[in-house]
Image (cartoon, rainbow, N blue to C red; front, side, top):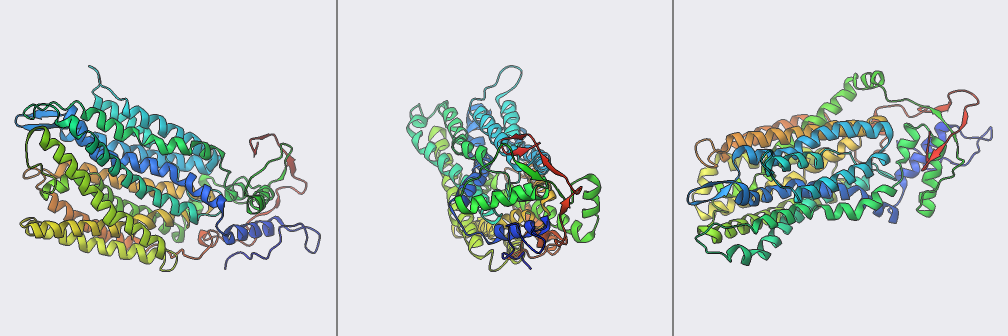
Length: 543
């Protein structure tokens, strides 16, 4: 049952005052029953801005790495320069490694010190490190690839699970999913626009001379553009309120949280009184002992196992494809330049950007919107199960029929169609739900930690995928192992079906219902009979 929205926040009741537990449940009911407002729209933008920037930077490198290779890579007689396998791996895997570490660390910090304090710091670091990538240069001691690896690690390090910001959790979750797709699409679109804009510059020189210094401008523009949405959103990120559930359940300040909720639902603004009087409730607190006690129960442990492994399995395919689309297109003879010299370089960049645009527009974006339309009616768990099952089937077809499909033009077109379907069922499937479910099933005091561990498991999958792809793809010849990689991905998608069975359905349930904790008497009155404290307030937070 959802908390009753009829409970009164006003002081009343048989003895003239509601208990803190009653006030908490009434406040939570207002959160869950709140209608969409302009405040929610602001929260959606704030929640999505960082993820847009992260997704843009992560997928822009797929195309930027090819450009960097033309300028700084190893030259082969008769062929354009390119990064060697270790360099290509370094610039692509640095971001997932940084994200893995950051999601565990910053997720834990967000549960300890609050979501609000971490959001602004996170975005500032991302903006600076992203801009620094565009200004990277090498020297005798460190190559430009080494500098890029460091900055890409830093840009992806400060990761905070952005669910439940402000009022309620559903809207920000939707915003972050949409923003990731937007970041992916815009990174490809910017790459396409920059490629077309520099066409004359690339072809200006003698076609028999591979003189491509203008491409050095191109990849810097593509990477540097990722700062723009972060800069726009920085002010709003610094001014968002602390989440009411954090104020209520972790700071244990039920009265302040109730006032915050009432203010937002009536005026749309948070206010604070520098002489705030607050009453600290007695509620469960996060600690190593409490963590072991909570997740020591199988009913809770299986949720963390299910979310972590499902995200791990999904990201092996999502990043294995997303960061290596150029190689897959080349293996299917889609992006192979028909000519040599500067014209061939331009045509290769043009073909690869167009191919990525097709995959994004025909697969990723429609998949997200279908998931958005059905996630509350069909449910999270069925969508994730269906997605993993369809991905298993698609990868089996593409892997075991790869040579047959690649033998004819019609077969290659069919492969592109199947590839688009994999993108579609990633988003209308686990790429949406593996983000949503961990933001709903853990209690407030472990929500960011649980989400961070799950997301970090996904990034570990991305690292495994990228390292494995780089080491396997050229076995037997250039891009000759792609078909076997598709077969391997099919296996991991099948394992994702079984990990999903560990998870509950979360649609139409409150976060408190999903926490596996009894909410009656969850908080009690002050820890002592007269513990009403007056604290020093700094920017609405009481110390």
